[in-house]
Image (cartoon, rainbow, N blue to C red):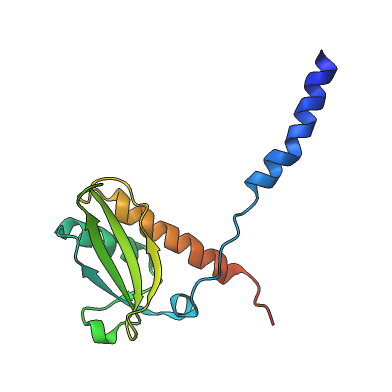
Length: 137
């Protein structure tokens, strides 16, 4: 009995190791990696959501937050979901309007910090992971 339990446990180890490996992602748009400035466009209907985005981006320190959209490399568009009472972050190329990244899985009410914090932290994680990878030639 003990031998069969040990055997079963040993067989499960490779499975657990393979599922805990880093997730692979499609590479981010180069504009996301090279951007220096960001404009926050708060269309969520909640000033608090804009404040939370500003605080998270300021704390990250990667981007300079600008007050004039024409001076931005990217636009962080904040919108709200009235049904789920959550918020969405869409990152747009400021020059073309093309969506570069979107997080629609933000949970919590738009007045809470969690939805925007989660969205920005997910983007931060992805940018930092990609920036840390060696460049392919």
